[in-house]
Amino acid sequence: MEIENVKIRLPSGKEAGLVDALGFCYDISDTDFQVLRILMKGTGKTEDELSSMLHLSKASINRSVNKLASLGFIEREKDPNSKGGRPRFIYTSISYEKLTEKIARDLKYCADIFSSSFVNQFGH
Picture 1 (tube, rainbow, N blue to C red):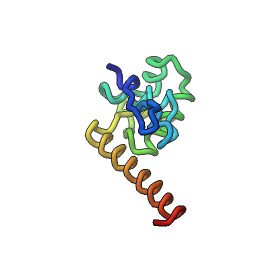
Picture 2 (cartoon, rainbow, N blue to C red; picture 1 turned 90 degrees about the vertical axis):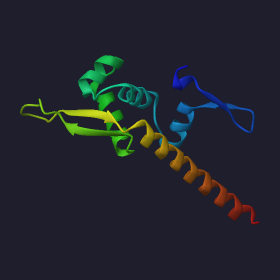
Picture 3 (spheres, rainbow, N blue to C red; picture 1 turned 180 degrees about the vertical axis):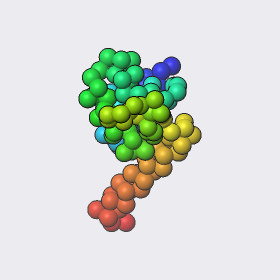
Picture 4 (spheres, rainbow, N blue to C red; picture 1 turned 30 degrees about the vertical axis):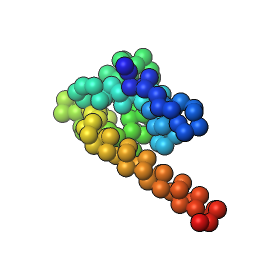
């Protein structure tokens, strides 16, 4: 089963998927998720390779890799084959273990904040 099809049933009875949770917590778009998914499946990719694989503009890919890098989900390093002009980068995902730990930690942090806000609002 593809990870984007995984759903969990919330206490309300509503179903939500991983993509929904990542979108809510990190403001990740479908494009961002697709870029992350590709980078998690293999070796590093350049923006050109990602653009070709996803049939999206380089500008769209650039926005996604910048967002994912700022969130700490991916890393970038200068492409050693890049010659002159603007440097090209190779993007890789952080390890699956680090990514799942980060997401779990961030979700717990958000839950703690919501819980604390609830207690402060209704006092008990």
